[in-house]
Length: 203
Image (tube, rainbow, N blue to C red; front, top):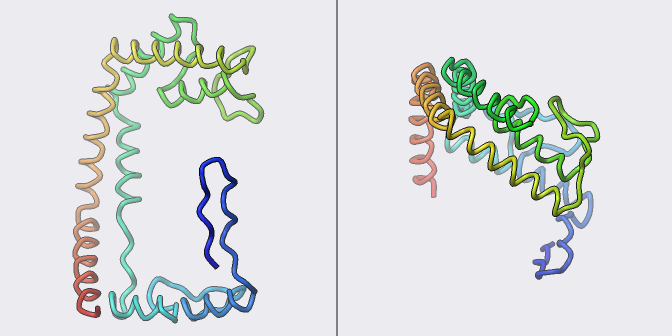
């Protein structure tokens, strides 16, 4: 079944659907060797059969497909970034600058962007943080308020040198993360290089 492309102004095409439950079962079994509705045996090694299992065997042999280090690297970098003392000082100054312009205490630019959303939309079950009193407003008024906040946000960032502090804190945090996970990163690179060569040879 092929989904038709939507023309400008038309409704989006329907989501793909199998013609029958039996067709879906046959597809999944051919792809993975498993039956829909039955608990998966996939352990990252050769738990899956079908085309997926054959491909894994070609690429990795009996070994587990290596885990990408990207999540661990990012988590470590974000943790280091959040602890940066200079960044904290710049954020405090940036927030105080906005408060002088009659905005509530906002913790960082992401918090300011979240605050601006409620110029347009009802707060409802809002996440933590300040919400503008009296909103939402009609589109034109909400847009004016959003632009005004963006302008003062940028001005305060300039005055406090916040953007440079953010860039420096992230660069420093990423260097720490890459150093801590160096073996994992290079091991993953080598495993993927080997798998690519095996795949090319198989083709």
